[in-house]
Length: 180
Image (cartoon, rainbow, N blue to C red):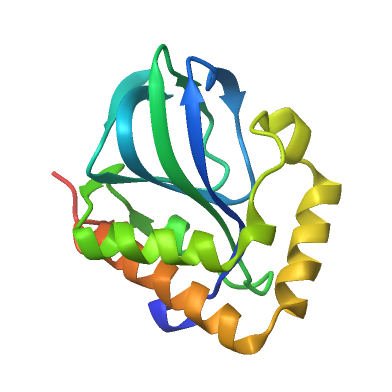
């Protein structure tokens, strides 16, 4: 797969204002998760390493990456769940690149994510518990709804996600790079 073939489909997007209730263990999804933290803090454990999520940053969890979340106070963030529309014979962009977990968010990034969420209220999660929304039936329903959405809306959402992913790609390492 080349970066030109990367076609993210938006499954969910919204703004979450949480208070000590973002505590989920061993989450592993077939979609990528992008977070834009606005206020407060939380932690995510990836591969046994705890990472602090803080305001003014973007965070990326690739698909099929097991993680746990923890929050013990106020935590406000935007979330975007994306799924790669790839043929079976192609590889995922996440298979080809080692992405950083965190990058700084610009004011423009925050404004664009807010615009995506505001313009697409139907993408908001009804519940934040992954056991309630992260299942095959919801994935199929979300993929169907994404493909049925207005083309201009789909292109706008894809462009915003591509811009956000570009920040991570700018600091990513290709798997073919020689490692000492």
